[in-house]
Amino acid sequence: MFHSIWLAYTGLALIGFTIGGYGTLVGAGGGFLLMPVLMFIYPHMPPSELAGVSLACILVNTLSGGIAFAKQGRIDYRSALLFAITIIPGSLLGAMATKYVPRADFEGVFAVFLIALSAFMFLKKTESGKIKPAEHRLNQKSSRFRKPTTMAVNGIVFEYEYNSLWGMIIFLFLGFIVSFLGIGGGALIVPTLIYLMNFPVFIAAGTSTLIIAIVCFTSTSMHVALGTFDWWSLIHITAVGGGMLFGAQIGAHLSSKVKGEWIIRALAAALGAAGVKMILTVLAL
Image 1 (spheres, rainbow, N blue to C red):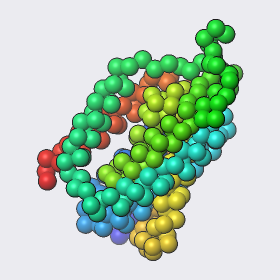
Image 2 (image 1 turned 60 degrees about the horizontal axis):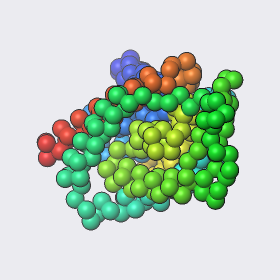
Image 3 (image 1 turned 45 degrees about the vertical axis):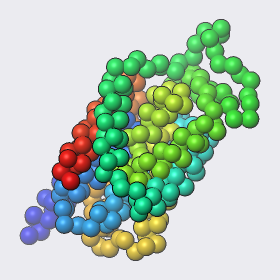
Image 4 (image 1 turned 120 degrees about the vertical axis):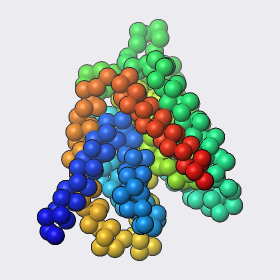
């Protein structure tokens, strides 16, 4: 019996290692992959308990990956804190809306959106964000809501700017969507930063990881306060989270080596798969 238990939890650790590595590579955390896997392995467990385990594991993953990204200088801390603070109340509104708004029809529309976004990310050329000739550089004049940002990573200078007020509105809405649908926000934060906030891919992945870590810490704390976790949960968090702890380091290392366009394509594949799964779920209702 001990042998079978050992194999089971070794398998969970390997799952955590794989999802943690992939999730950190694309800056998406991995919750959009872990939750479906847990639901498949434990179909009779309460979704709330599985969600708590998933959030705690993603917290471990993003903290591990965040440390690696911080060492690489790939986190825009000011932006991460701003958007994390904004996304949290949006997620609370989304949770309350589930009691009043039927989500089945909306899920189908959003699934089509995810697939379309996946195709868009595959086909669109992404700017590298590297420093440009002087005549093409950003306007360095700051305003109340728009401030140019310059970051250097491995000797490469990245320049970008975004409207902070617009960003707060977007992330408030994003928090509502991911909470309402229960899909986890990691897979949507990276394309939001890249295509709507003008972040370079390498900065977006690191910044997204910190945003997810803050949100997961808040959500996990709520699960602790509600008494969601028991010994079963803690054992699974240890097994899966332990694997993610090491997988995140590998993912962060690979992320610094892989071209930005391939990171985008890897994330696009995950978004497409999530969209297809959501459509199948809706059709099965």
